[in-house]
Image (cartoon, rainbow, N blue to C red; front, side, top):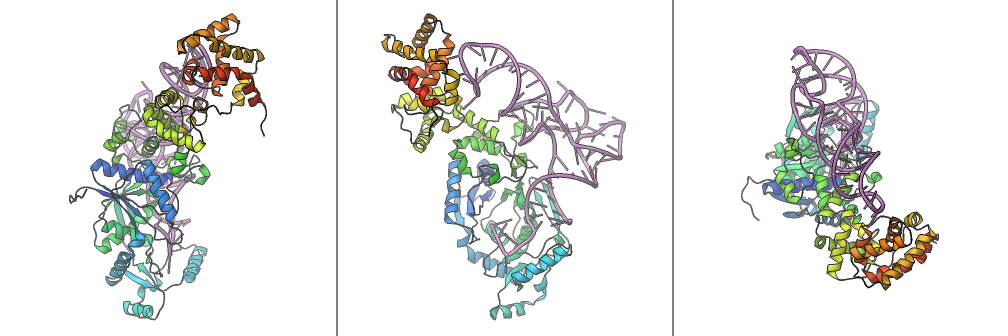
Amino acid sequence: MSSSNSSLPRVRFAPSPTGYLHVGGARTALFNWLFARHYGGTFVLRIEDTDLERSTATMVEGILHGLRWLGLDWDEGPYHQTQRMDMYRENAAKLVASGHAYYCFCSREELERRRAAATAQGRPPRYEGLCRNISREEGARRRAAGEAAAVRFAVPTSGTTFFDDAVFGRVEFANTELEDFVLLRSDSGPTYHLSVVTDDVDMRITHIIRGADHISNTPKQVLLYQALGARLPVFAHVPLILGPDKTRLSKRHGATSVIAYRDEGIVPEAFRNFLALLGWTPPEAASGEAATEILGDQELIRRFDLDGISHSNAVFDRAKLDWFNTEYIRAYPAEKLLPLIQEEWNKAGLEPAHSDRDWLLATINLLKPRARSLKDFATSFRALFTDTFQPDPAAVEKFLHDERVRQLLVELGERYAASEDSFTEAETEKLLRDFAAEKEMKAGALINGARVVLTGQGVAPSLFAVMTALGKERTVARLKATQELAARALTPEI
RNA sequence: GGCGCUAUCGUCUAGGGGUUAGGACGGAAGAUUCUCAAUCUUCAAACACGGGUUCGAUUCCCGUUAGCGCUACCA
């Protein structure tokens, strides 16, 4: 727990609760978590809620929920910046006192006007340091007189600021490109730069792993560290995740909320695996060894390091996510799947007709090799678990359009009912094939038809496995009701 | 516009001064036959462009182009 060992890394995930936990944020959190776990360090969670207008408690809950679903547990926090306001003000005052910052009395309107004018004249719309020359004494006097003032950082007017990024290498900015950014707003609330740096220093964060959209912010923060006399952390900027059209991932591209993927039946471990490989390559792949991409938590943690992170943005590939999901569902033991599937049943209002646990597990095992999502157990596999299901009209059309097939299926149901044979895969198959031969009907036609009758679907596991899973009684009942099922499917509803 | 970052199959990527440029997802074809979204086999698919440097550039350098990011008293 407590680590007085200062060589262990301390990282943080610092979301702003102005929205749910989105895919990009989730990956940033994952990389931080993986890094902390790999080195036995500490993963801190900090809520950056200084934007009072846009931050909500609901979003905080949503973010925590998303992280928990993903299985990313934090060691410290969640800290809330709104509860640390005094520290930011103290630091701002300290910076003013040391001459690194100054009071700015410009109104928003004036700033706006100047920006517009600058843009119109083709000049960069940068704050030009109007208030920089106001003496500390005069500043204090005007503030005492009740004039509103923001605190701005006095960026050096020459030279460069650089940092060595663990992903991108040395990144350098001319100081003249940096404007005198605001530290404290005129309402005395901190801005992002002040609060992050204050907190990262105070929380002794050693590695800042965050989105590459922060690269341009970094020199300002470097300047702040220096002005505060604090030691620089290692910066590791992670390239962004894009939509299929290569623009930044947004609602336009469908689900961006992590929780939406849970709702779509994605297994958290699959999502983690997928996300980890978006922008990061494990070392054995880098050394050319052919390796599986299916990497569980322990494998991910063991391999993860900053030097495997790519430099370029990555497109979110839904098809690959689905592939990971099928792989995980297939590999999971039924015991592990059952509670997850039960959630899907609850959501779908499905009450399994059979509550016997062994039967449920066996049936899940029968189905899981062809599941693509947890939802499949409540949708296309529904008929295996309950008697109330809607047949797929396309499947009915394809395999039950022939009246003779339908009649024979009803008759087949009677045969099964009358049979004394044990209701096993081998026996049920033998009976069906003998029956088909007797009627001079291709067994395949009856098998495909029976599948639709029993499952409502054109695609399902082996028919005889389905029969034995369903049991004799339900198999017989459904076969006998073939005509009703066909009528139900072929009658346009509503 | 300015500044910054990036550029290998459709996608995620490996590689690296001389290679049949490798893997995964997706796609196509075939096998199988009891459906396929399963399984097996096979195939197609990439070094953005232009200059250098070099005996030799996909690789190193410069430029162009394109994409993305930042450019707030948001974070």
